[in-house]
Length: 182
Image 1 (cartoon, rainbow, N blue to C red):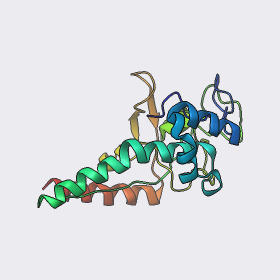
Image 2 (cartoon, rainbow, N blue to C red):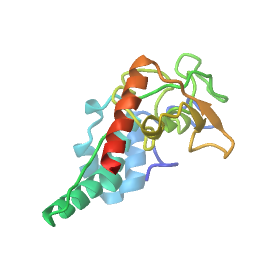
Image 3 (cartoon, rainbow, N blue to C red):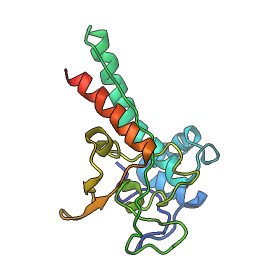
């Protein structure tokens, strides 16, 4: 998976900005080796809002999305009921992060781990439209607006209050999951 190998924005120290076409190619070659050129043809930069978005989509498709779909198809073909979901809502944190070098691009982390991993800025932008890092849905599913961020130190507590639309989204998601559990 992408931790430690994805192109970074250089907004969070000590990361450098590797979100360039050359940085994309170098990171893809480091991960995909001889298949990198074929993979980059399937994930061309001009179809993504940012270099990390293109890289992470290739990574997610290879290691999470496609394998999950194969398992779901396998279970369905065996006559089992199958449910799948996709979450794509970005929630910036209301606080300014320590170590952020771009006061206009970093408005905090904790609500989405992609900010702390330096693959998306901490504010709403074209690169965060329809963005959600793995696990970003959990506090909506459980209705929690304050708690561990799941990435930082064990005692790293993040406050991610819902706006009106997010509170409604959380209510709907909790209802769906409760209905599924019954």
